[in-house]
Length: 107
Image 1 (cartoon, one colour):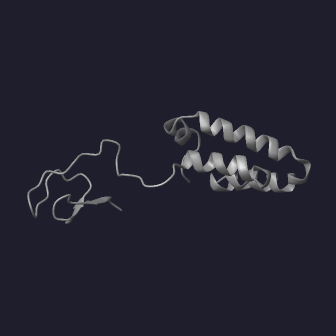
Image 2: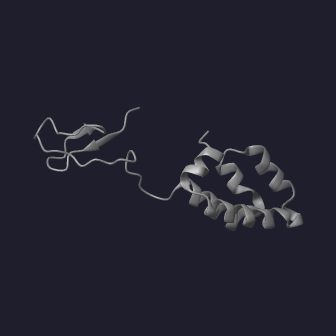
Image 3: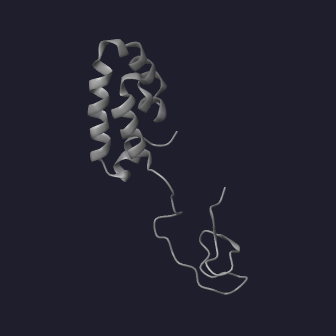
């Protein structure tokens, strides 16, 4: 599926890499990092899940590590996943988005 954008002048739907709108001829602004992303990054979401819900391994399920998520659930009564979740949340927050995507690619 190709990404799309809309012309800043006439609102025509354009391919994301279009530089000029074929309908009205207006030059389009460039977005060097790819499509505009609205919302929170995966890294921040995973960090919040780890810090707030790390006891139950929600961050592991979010990152596609279902086996580890189940282990967190099995041991949630010990308190260990709570501590590990906070540590992992801090680790996620200190990484850059690029480093995070290398370590935890989308599945």
